[in-house]
Length: 164
Image (cartoon, rainbow, N blue to C red; front, side, top):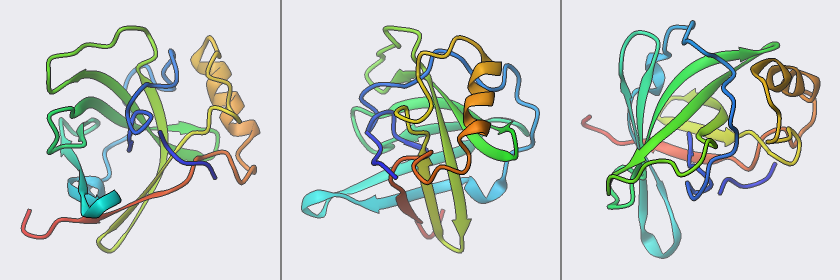
């Protein structure tokens, strides 16, 4: 698996990957286990936070890194690609009021929650071409590559912040 450049980071959130969504409209209900404030250690003792809030019964609002002046914001929903349920992130702005400069606003992530640990892995653009032109092509490419161990990038592990 290769490393992210979110859940979640948009190329550590520097740039997003895809121009097409998997889901045009959110159809699956949110997973309440994802909701909350999460953190992970970074270099030099720094902490990076991920905030996941319910926007409605089918969508989340994401802020990453949530305590940074450079925080990015996304709408997210669960969607299906073949047998996989993954998170679709649609990045729409930054804490500084920045808006996307191109149509590459989508990222897709595999996730798991075990106790107080959230593991996130972003879809690997070296396995699923980021130039796909339709939701159908994207879903098929993910499903066709589901058995590949590098379908998703390296995992990011967050711990739930207590008291939230």
